[in-house]
Length: 371
Ligand code: BYC
Image (cartoon, rainbow, N blue to C red):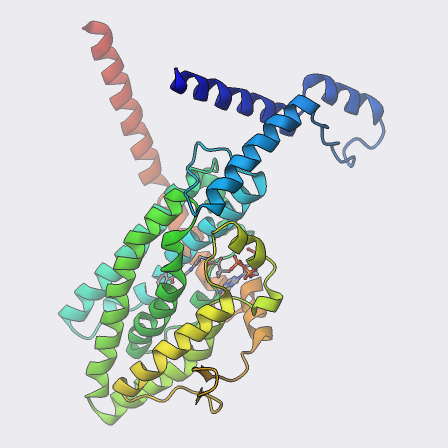
């Protein structure tokens, strides 16, 4: 009985919300009737909800707010504000894109890994990143957007992916540094996402973080081996650290004061720790690791601040960060072109999988009919 009532309430909310957002036929007719000239440029007029519709919307919003305030989880079939849905699609799809574009700088080194052991580890790591992309695309699909739509946004340059993957991997030490610093920064950012208010994203992040932890350790271990090697190997590690350090600090996103999405993201329990606080945590965690490794972090202003109980660090070049985010980093064009080509080259696989699924479904239908 309770189940039935819940179902009726959900149905009623869905019908009213559809009527509110997409408009009733009468409202559309009136609108088009009123703007016969320049209709192509006219903005659609939002339907005003009736008092009854507003009441249902208010109740749905109150229920959503109560779940968020109680630190609960929102699931795909729950009502959610459109802005919450849009924010999640933006963040989860960008995260997925980052994982699959992130396969490229390291994938570039698979054929040149210095030993069979390193090659096997790197293949496993790059494959894991592909898997992370797939969990994340699946999580985003639960919000009503298709994988084709997300990939189209990436391939046409409308969607962002992490700035960090637009820099070249010049030497084998870069592969180690990506593991140690890039994956290290990623874990710092992603552990709080395991408590994100959207269930499918939070659950995907639990597995992603476990794998990222292995990635970070393998990077550190590869660098440690090089630091115990020849002076040329040690210099190669230091050079890679010098080139990646600042890019990793920028990876956490703009300063809180310039982060347009942070306040709302935190209110909704999507973001749990701010960009600047995560960056600080990363610096504090990395300084002792650099000491163990025997490398210098390339920042003359980096020092322990007793009063704050944190390390102070120098200024990040935000102009360079934004140029990269906006498509003008050293490798943006190359990365996107490689992704688009991989997608096009894979068309036959998608077609074959679809044809196989259709054949299977037809065979099952025929068997059922015959039975
Ligand atoms: N790069 O208001 P803000 C990995 C954009 S994968 C590019 O602070 P928000 C790995 C931001 O999107 C790591 N864009 O935004 C994979 C926004 O633009 P839009 C990927 C950036 O969302 C393979 C604008 O700047 N991790 O580690 O509150 C191998 C203003 O920013 C960046 C994730 O995606 C950036 N670095 O916070 C190895 C984690 N930073 O969208 C390793 C999930 C900011 O309004 N994402 N922007 O046009 C997040 O946690 C958050 O989205 C961010 C940004 C912290 C990244």
